[in-house]
Amino acid sequence: MIIEQIDAPLAGSLLPTLTGNYYTSHDIFVQEQELIFEQMWFCVLRASDIPGSGDYQTVQVGRESLIVSRNRRKEIRAFYNVCRHRGMKICAEPSGTGKRSFQCGYHAWTYDLDGKLIAAPNLTKMPDIDRDDFGLRTVHVREWLGYVWISLADEPPSFDDTVLAEVTTRLGVVENLDHYEVDTLAVGKRVTYEVNANWKLIIENFMECYHCATIHPELTEVQPEFADGLAAQVFVNHGAEFGSDIKGFTIDGSPGVALLPGIDPDQNRKYYAITVKPQVFINMVPDHVIFHRMFPVSADKTIVVCDWLYLPSVVESGVDLTKSVELFNRVNLQDFEACELTQPNMSSKVYEKGGVLVPAEHHITLFHEWVLGMLGHDGASVGE
Image (cartoon, rainbow, N blue to C red):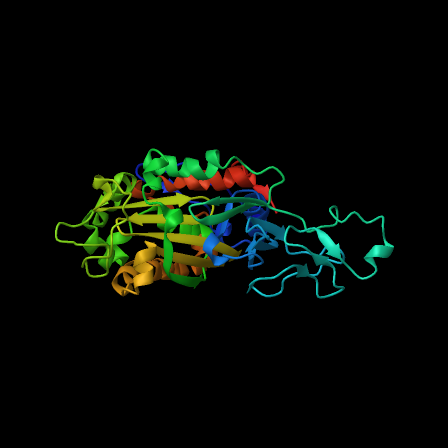
């Protein structure tokens, strides 16, 4: 199969998109797993999901199953979910609590919470086995914003030059995000969406607001500036102002909950959004933060986990968060439906050479160029 790259720019206001096979090809998706998801910093879970020693979750990053857990000192550790003996999955369940060790169900090789091999049948009769060398393979871990980020790369990329650079690009300085104190917030609501669409379609959707007036009536009621798709690109960078009669970021514009105390006065009636490649979206409003994590499953399927984060006192109070949650839940459902209706046509002969981007979407070409660069596709046809 021949993979065609982005053609030369079209005349006038239109720029070309990626060609259709970038959203449908299994082989391209495997390249993305290897060269993007398994190389970059990838956000896997909220640290509060594994609060205690021995608590763990299994996550899928690229082609790899991983165990993310806390050791006896409650430090976060991550390992490949692969027994060093014969390769069986160590943890078959998606989560567990208070384990004292990890044991393979095949031959009972057992590892402590730091991954060291501590027991196996007849292990004492094999004194030449180095228990550290045959421990679970570790993964690079970083905790930021109260989330656990991992990198499978032998030498992970600079966190500052990748993740934090995305924040700086959108907000000017990282400190503008620090005001929201995301790491101190509590999960008030979590929704997991199964989206039958390629992960890049979802990112492209989040990157532009040309569609907002068409499919997001509730959002544009709260954020009138979003009705102008071109202007919205500027407002997202510098904060989109609530409508004059809007009291809060809620489904009906009614007041929200307690404001986050660290935000600046000029942030208390504004919405901000950040896309952190390859799979995180962060939306900040005065009283909560909406944090999306994407888990690409295949060329045409993506799991999106969305957390609504509030002050712990708000969550503990039991206050009804429905109106607050429903606004972006509805935005998500509208966006994901649009992506799912787009996905099948990525294989149409009409889209063989791709589509076009209007000026309000031109910045998406930077994302396309980044994808091509990460895959090593330099613009020439690539044999597959």
